[in-house]
Length: 406
Image (cartoon, rainbow, N blue to C red):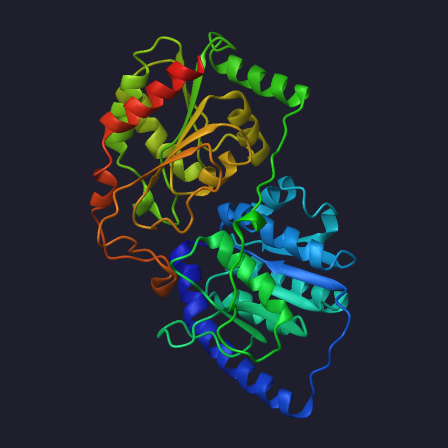
């Protein structure tokens, strides 16, 4: 389904369902006393954004430390399952549950099947990692979890999703998303019904990132794939991965196409440089325009042609990743690739956690204009906060890094 359709369904239908479920929830509390029980099954719900899954790694690890004998499950959209699988923190395949979102019919049918399965599993604790999604809040309640942890709107208007949580955590817009996710986990030790969780400091030492290694077989396979496109590419070359389009979800986060074209032209002045363009199927249009405008056979277009595992393997053998504020920022942090990332409309809440990243942020007074309060929507049609990042400074930084590296 298109993202606007999903937003409308979540808003118009979600509010109604949340309202009636809240009545049922509050009524049942009057007649069903709360009982503490041993935590055996835990569910994390993170549906839409693959990059957020990387940021949730520390939270899942923390839960496993707190409840080492509990079974951990993860619910996401089917297209994102490879990311959580690659993190290698939920190993058992059957514990990664998925819902198709390519059509309304598939969304409904898969949701019903998942609800049935989760109720049979008897989930004790659910962590809703979504920012005020009504769909995830409804799932969390309907599966019958005795403890339901998630972000609560408190006095923020327009983000109503009922009163279905037992542990309501205040979402801090001034804090990195990884810390917000950890706040959900830490709040589980507080009594149900206490407001404005979490009232304590979370240590930076709790933020950890996994590293995905590449096997010799996978390395040979990805080199073979690239050489099929251009036989001149090899170990003696400088490989620069470019992710030019921020995606259909939030295209306003993209650094201008003209800037990418100018930067690539400058980088290709070095005859050892090869450019690998990546992205989803929605990036194909930008890829075609770049290739046509630059006209150099050292540009390898792979938009829509790589799996998640292929992408990670490409990062492993490449020198530099240049990307917008999107999933690849976080995927790159799973490897040792040097990342140059452009941030603007979304602020720095999702900046990369790895130390091997250079972030460009003009810090305009209007940034961030994409927040949880507007569900990632903005009236801005001219992202000057990204246009303020010049090709000159990016080219200088990338060139200096490649010179030092070689």
